Length: 422
Image 1 (tube, rainbow, N blue to C red):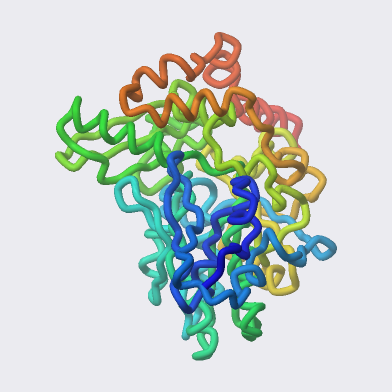
Image 2 (cartoon, rainbow, N blue to C red; image 1 turned 180 degrees about the vertical axis):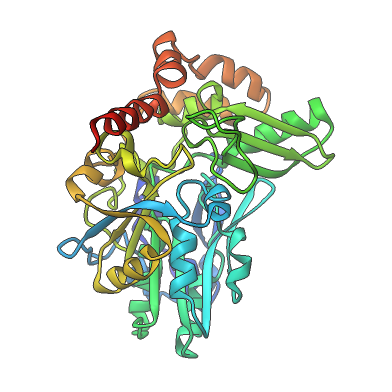
């Protein structure tokens, strides 16, 4: 038993010092640390003092308390999309994750990733890559990591090939956990997403409550970036197995009563509020992983800037991915996955130019505290929140996205090269 919490966050109470990876709770054999939501909806460790034996393991495993090596010198970047249009259509961007899974997971494997269940997001694992659709699509909520670090440790000791995907902070927690137990990680491949900060789960909870009042059903499926649209950039009709509308992805909500709702990205209050950095986890504003140096073998993201520096990889607005190999193991995974993709190697300088989270963490919005107070207030509805805090799209934005958008720029580039014979 102790009167002095070991972890820095529990000593100081400064929430920006906790990334919410959950490694401390998983390493505690006495159950003295529990992950619990605060008023903002983010999960933090809570100490049960009578169970603490002051062993110090929570301090040793915390990525915020201990240095973690980052990868940088062997980076190699690849841009492109899956040759299988069905995979590409069902993915947020170009389907790179599915291509890595398909080639890396040959036998005796286990795959970990984030699963969505209504508005809840949690980490789980599968042993059949045919079920990989559970881990596709961006969730935009920090998943409940549960006991997955413990599970990875067990599977690695059993000789399994393990692929673990998550946010950089979750990868950092896993690495420190395995390092503490001196687990052989030669058969572990870590895959992280380019993360621009996780929003408060309270927003979606309030949205869910509102939908129940207005439509009589709760959220059964939430697709933050659904590829919707009638035609692609050269006028061909879309089909369920081909391409999508990557530049104009909508939020699609399926309700428990069968109703379907959609909201265009640039008219969606959620995106406006999130992009203003009003509701991110406090640690996101001081994220130690928002840098070119990475903590995972492989980094995945959207190939932003594709219409500028590699328009040949735009692929009819169906979605395109960037894959960054940060280690030799990552390079091997990239080499194998690229066989099933349309694409080629690209310059890291170009990638970094269009990936803000590889350069810096998001800035703190000075109005965040005021926004979160409104969000926490049970008497303020999500409609009132949106009216007060979300920005309507400007005429300039509408013109740049809907009239003179990326698809039009790429179309002109294609015409130019067609007539120039290049």
